[in-house]
Length: 542
Image (cartoon, rainbow, N blue to C red; front, side, top):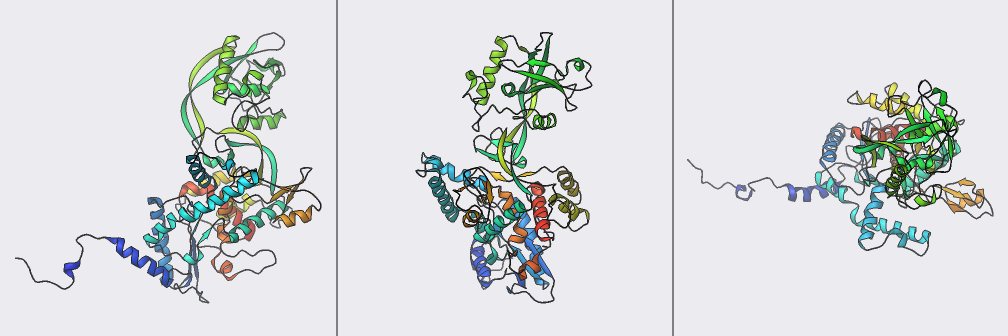
């Protein structure tokens, strides 16, 4: 039996749910009405006596598009926010996007490459080229940088769009500069020549956290290093024969009976007109290879630590482009590192110094941004001292220790709880944070140099000039690691008081924030650094 009676309105219903038209109408309408506004039940104004609920949106890269991970996380955040808003909490869900220094620069550089030019071609002088390139990035950001926030609007995220930020905004940039100057004045930011992960294509240092090790098929070359007194030879096992051009020692385990009698002697470095010592260190694995390893402190992280312990010289034999430099024999100079490897191996074989070659699986460090093999490189960089206690700090604790304590005391908790172990393992073994990047897009480091190379750190050029009257100043070319500015958002977005200004209502109402919904993969990148920076500068947890 069929009912043929027409029912009002039913004939206009679509046979399938098509949300596009509904989203297109109600999303903008909700935003126009300010339903996501912070404060009491979306009124935009706080209600005295009511509790606060605040949540930071993990700022997606300005280059990004919404993926399922974002959608999942944001659904949880939206549910929590709507729940507390309806309960009458003073509620703030703060949205924003990250300027994504490396990723954004790569996007714009690729667009330039399609036109047959590089960023260096964008002006008659390097400063002009840089200025024009940065302007080009801002132009790209205005045209294409709102893709992900447009998608969030379509999804119906009830964030407070009036609070939307970009990490390169003037307001947030001032906080970036102010915190840098404060850390420098506290003795917690310094500049030094250290071994860092270097991307030859990007021409910049990259974080340990932006490097992934990939297992690849390689070789283990066994090379004979003749003893200088003619009494024999030591056979060294290495996976990178090209770096032997920068060797400063060969090393054995102090308890290895095979080599104890040779410690302190000299060997001739093949292919180079140099002699280097035989040293001993517990770092050597007696069972690996021949039990003898070469030491190249300027081109290996572990060797760098050995070099520091034994006060060895550091000979860098590669340029920033990963070609062989003038510190190596002339015949190799100018060769790409992998071409040089083949040449060195061929020459070792020709002189009878290549004892054996074995197939070997090895872990190769790859930059996740460019896919390039990362080169450990000795360069001048800026660092934040993670474990040093500032003389100006009344707590007597380092930046890292404050963050460790915040979790240990339960001020910050992890769900699921097992991620506490991951956090603590990294924090308890933390290294000083390399915060400089050799890029043009980002927060330029607020440091200037006079003619003698003295460093002047200041909030602006006028302040720097006042500290060095009559001196010709040159600004540092480097920019800050993107994660530096994003580590500040718990308080930089809440009106953290600048010098001589009072605390804002937002700062007191919404910091500490209530919850963070994010992926475990950025516990190191972002979560730990937010905890460190926020506890250090505000005494509160994010």
